[in-house]
Image (cartoon, rainbow, N blue to C red):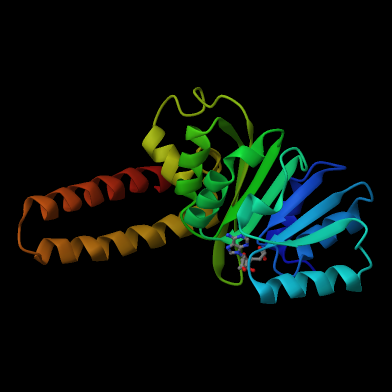
Length: 231
Ligand code: SAM
């Protein structure tokens, strides 16, 4: 039984895709995709021994060794250039996902779709995509087991138009998520605002230095910007 979060990620994988699932743990996502679509093939990448072994066991259990190769290694180092057309990276922080993409840039030639599911800091991924010629084409925000997750889907392309206005706001909140402004989105950002306000109070108590002043102003601006969007 795949989690709702991974089902949503799987929904963006094209028919017959050659995927690499990086940080695959139990290889649940590649197994699910191969069972759903008999044309899909996958590489499941894992850097840690425990999850790597779990992935191998799971693939053997469902008899998919001929279609899913489990490889041990860091990020995109497990794939060769041109080997896959779709990459999924799910269940990690946005900073780590952006680092994996950055360190594996040369492996992205020929890749047509990135499906990324950060637990936090999706803005770091949006920024990386912007700077490296990837166009964000869809976003989702979901809540599962009292945690909120985002899904970002990108294809090679020019995003000048997408970010032409309100760039800062869109990078932080997500251009598509802003448009949808659903309840989960409002919940996430209300929670963040409350958190920032607590930090702001601390800054208000702190000794006034240029740095404190600057941080405080940045926080105030950020709070105001996000409040405007979710109100
Ligand atoms: N993708 C699965 C999911 O969404 O349910 C598993 C998520 S699990 C929380 C994160 C996995 O990523 C762990 O198994 C961890 O070992 C692996 N991981 C972390 N950094 C990695 C890296 N640089 N390269 C490959 N795997 C990595």
